[in-house]
Image (cartoon, rainbow, N blue to C red; front, side, top):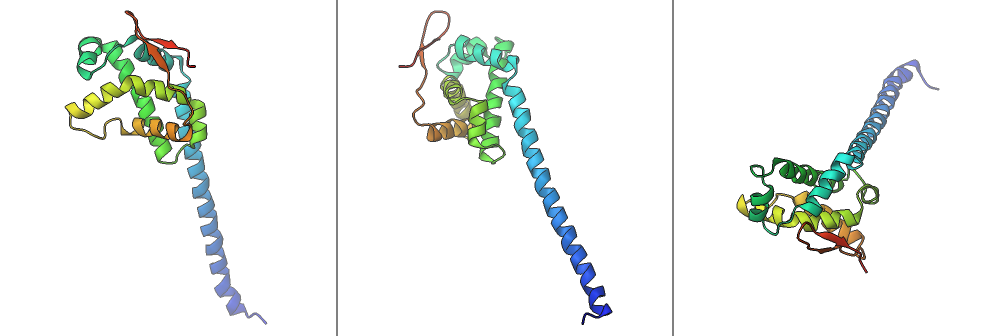
Length: 178
């Protein structure tokens, strides 16, 4: 038979166990909520017209092959709007890579929000700028998360065709991939 003293000893242990389980479930739910909030914040950015206007300006209207050429034509002193377009959109790709690497967003969900062809096209345009800044400032980590994003997209979707650009006097034209 269970004595009163035994019950008095067991009740606090049961209460503590229930409290710990409740706390663990609460923490898990908070983490899920935070991930969902970060994902939705990212989604909000990549669905804004402003982001796509800036992206189009960088990819189709900024013609450069080196960091020096970019700086001459589109750098902050020469063309603050063009520089802002590049900086802002680059940070979206950098942030996407960070969210992916940290496991905050799953790859298939991220690549639905930000298609692989867009990531590849962006990397092709931004790479001379990123590698130029890495060399100029001796910062090999600059743009690292963007590059990670591009590598993951390529790894998971190796059959995605690379966009082809045809240079014209005004701006590059995206050609149909065969």
